[in-house]
Length: 283
Image (cartoon, rainbow, N blue to C red; front, side, top):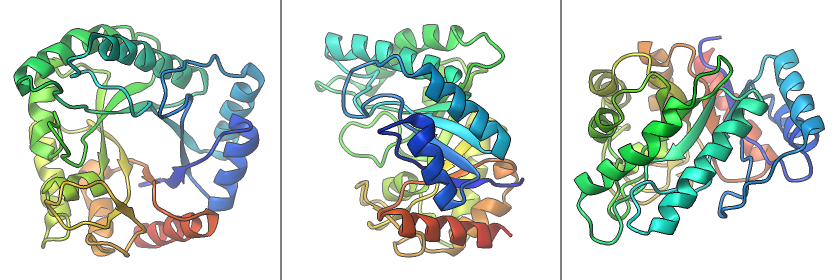
């Protein structure tokens, strides 16, 4: 399938029991889950029975699975405890991703805290992240996917071009990929709503990190205009990006086979409507 479409699904109460049921409501062809509290440092072991049911359920229905790592992770932090916990949390997410059959684990690219220079924070990210990438040696290990943020604060990576220095310090590791959030990129200043804006952003991505590095798209419209540097998701077509750029994304060679995951407002009905709209643009 050219672009499987799905959404981030809740899993409280059971990875398979709740997550797969919600995915069926959405008619999802891809799902994203948390494997830990997204706003905490806990590293729960998971439930082997639910893991197996989730993995086999996804396989039987042809649904690809993806993990989003906790939001607290920041490899550019000047706080030693945060840096150490970021490594522990990321290692946990990657391990749990493998255990549930996920193809990639998404992590936000972080920020340079404490007034330190961006180059210093990136050097620390290299020191902390390269060992994690080198541990991904099994055939069923997931990719580590960098997700640029909307540009708040001293962001290490928000616009597409910012991925260049990040990939450079991580030596363009073969297990490194990109998750492009349309809301983040647009709000950061890459105007997807401009004429050929989506095509231009994807052309730039290929020139910056190489072809084939884009593994996942977070398909979210933006409540804020381009360059606002505020992360506020909107339903597809209800924000400043609009509908056509999503169709443009799905026509670009870089997105061939790349799933689109929605993280939009609203409950099951709103999410199902967004999934159906993206499918209609694709088909």
